[in-house]
Amino acid sequence: MTTKNAYWFLFYNDDLLIKEEQGITTILTTSDLTTVQLQPTNAQCIGKLHEMECYVATLDSESIPVGFSFKKIRQLYGNMEEECFWFACRAFHITNWMRTSKFCGCCGSTMTVSTDELAMKCVQCGHIVYPRISPAIIVAVIKDNQILLARSNRFPPNRYSVIAGFVEPGESLEDCVQRELKEEVGVEVHSISYFGNQPWPFPDSLMIAFTAQCSTEEITIDNQEIVDAGWFSAHNLPDIPDKLSVARKLIDWFVENHQHNPA
Ligand SMILES: [Zn+2]
Image (cartoon, rainbow, N blue to C red; front, side):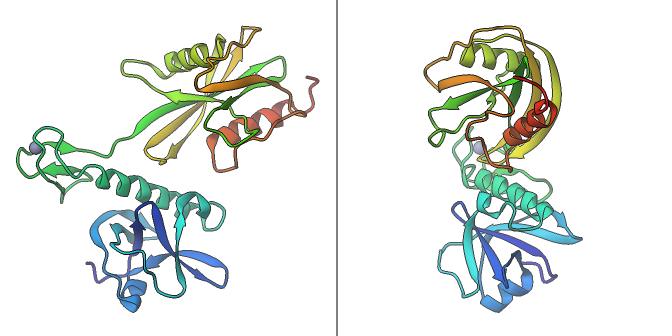
């Protein structure tokens, strides 16, 4: 363990240990670890935040000292400095990857953390694996001042959002946008434009967001993943995702640009 003061992102399963003082949520530092005598395992340096080194590590027990608590990563959004929140997302992604990469996919032997790069290496055959990042597209489809929103069977009741899906091997991002829209809601689009992107470590995605114009009138839902879909004006939105998600940023963009137009 380093003796310098550093940030420690300590996980017990999916939960991050944080410190709460006078209503302010912060990440633990090396001095906190010393004070409470916590002994994390599998420590891995994952970069620097505020000029301090950052370590991700795991705890074997969920028993915690007074003044500390475990939180789900998504609960921390809006409750801590944004830069710190996104670093916690990086730590969460890496700890999940390390936990699910304990054995070599080639020979079944034990993997160990590489000392010179962010990778796990097989002690037997030398096979190296890097953190898995799964690209996924997400798209705001617009037609006549309305946005296409759909309900997945995985959503909370009454929640609607924009269409999203994982990129398949050999596929460009634009091909993926066209395929997902065709499969899930049966529409065809043109004028696909890049909007932005956002890491989404639940568990390992990178969301790449687009806007597109629709050339199909009718929606035909797939009835498997999508249970309902429709066109919504800026004045007539259903329940939508929270501000953390890039889905919400796309919907907010739509509202900003279409709220003065008739539906
Ligand atoms: Zn191996």
